[in-house]
Image 1 (cartoon, rainbow, N blue to C red):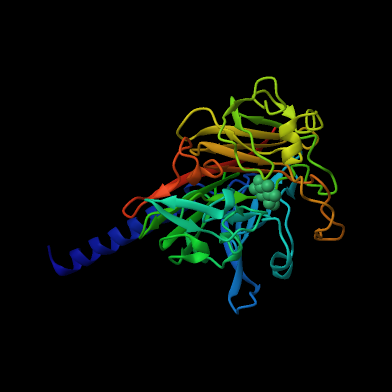
Image 2 (cartoon, rainbow, N blue to C red):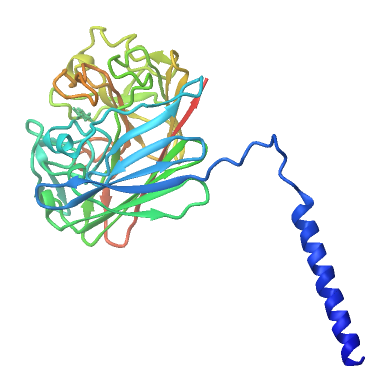
Length: 390
Ligand code: BGC
């Protein structure tokens, strides 16, 4: 082949490839009436303020393809707002909270926070491991509640965006020093909030320690599925898949008994409104000032354990977990003193919590599933909150 034939052939080849590429490009012209693809999920960050000891707090906003939005601040890993659609497709915030760091610093009943190192109560703020007694800070009458005076809800977590295929995710990390709050061992905890594109929030907790310790992490969002926080939650229909619950003493410490829910106001195995039996004459309702108890969940492994449904808006929340227990607390201590964003105050029972966890006071009750974590072991647990409508 002489030089000019080669040149001609090359030119012809280049021309053919160009025509082919143009054709490919034009093969699927966008149809005029085709709906544009849903926007990808996003995560953004903004400054939220500074703690009194000078730590910067950020707010992360995760938004999925459908438009569900979850706002998380690095102080306490608090979910400050979480929108969910009603049956007409309108999104509204369905969790109680505040709109400034100052209010979270002033007074909060754990609105939306990560709870640790030990969620729920430990009797008299004491427990023993390998024959050594540990004394915790007490902050709830004679007992320790939700970690103590400065639990994981009151510390600043380190945050990083987590790459995920589906939705958006935020990873929070906190290293609790050996002896902090009275607990033994340096505990490194991570909590990942993963908002999926099918309107679920997966909360994955992990922890490791360098000395034998105890751990029981949970999430303390107060839900009101009506999206209207001037209304109480007594009309929400609840299910809890549990044949037994844990009766408590006058200071809300479990007595150790696992009592059948059958023929008691604590039977939520079939859907019933929170308000249906709450005013019944019942010693346990008196002690809890309403529902403020742990249910011993049926089954094991990751499974659906609870649902909450608000008929007025059609919002349905389904909770799945691998934990053995769930604390159902229906806002009995909300008393109209805490301010609501936009004006007004949070009145009695305007939010309920469904806190998946190990049983309260487990370190002092040998018949309960253990909450001990040893060096070399990994604490790992997951809970999913899924929203839909019906
Ligand atoms: C407890 C309540 C407590 C509330 C704090 C719940 O997890 O069960 O007894 O008052 O947290 O707001």
